[in-house]
Amino acid sequence: MALMESERGGTGILNLDEVVDVLRGKRTVVLTGAGLSTDSGIPDYRGEGAPKRNPMTFDQFLGNADYRKRYWAGSHLGWKLFDAARPNTGHAVLADLEKRGFVSGIVTQNVDGLHVRAGSTHVVDLHGSVDRVRCLTCGQMFARVSVADTIDRANPWITRPDAVTINPDGDAEVSDWADFEVPVCTVCGGILKPDVVFFGEYIPKERFSEATALVRASEALIIAGSSLVVNSGIRLLEQARRRRLPIVIINRGVTKGDSRATVKLDAGTSETLTALAARLVS
Image 1 (cartoon, rainbow, N blue to C red):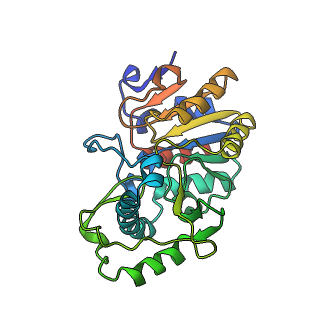
Image 2: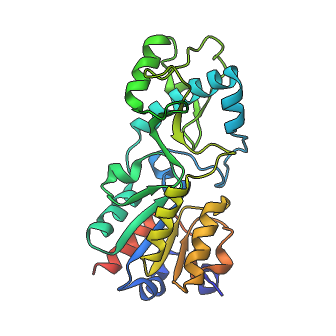
Image 3: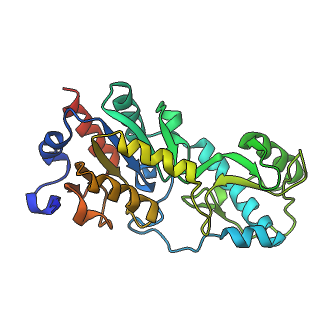
């Protein structure tokens, strides 16, 4: 049974001794969600105050040219804001813990690339990353910055990323997209898509296998900033639970894994990870 923070009668920051006892000396894999990137200005899908939305599905994107116009217009502006975002202290702490040997690797549900920019080296982008673009016809991969340059030249009027509402998947709310010119593959002319997992798509098997291997090679699991609504996170938690690994969940609000955690801290990720790291390396 999970030991919930409310049972201790304190805040997550003041009651980390139990977490340190659980994790000390154990190589720990970390699963991160959108709650870790909110301090970098990227919103959370399901956090307090987050608006409900229905992201575009893969079938919609693939089957309709107008959907692709709408998506690429919003994704282009969203990527500009993602590209301008900077890693926060939570990202930096995890990168440092990896260098020190406490963290064996990071599996992230985020697509913002901030873990890599913070210096983490063993990162599994479970849902892909917005800084890459893939051709759905020939498989050619492109750097997002080169595709963005092409879009800017073809659509010089779409230059105001500061005037839109950004979403956690890198998409932005846009209304003026009817004349948007969609980029195509420069190799075969095929359909381009940011290398992220859309709703209705499956996580590539090799990517999930890499995440599974990290869990198997570790001795504990931290889940930071994820409500665990997405099935992939629950599957990794279950793998850890079946191996009887200590599981620590750090998240503001309820998650679907709370009852299966060894310890649940209802707290912000950046400040909690910072305080936890200070105790682990002392």
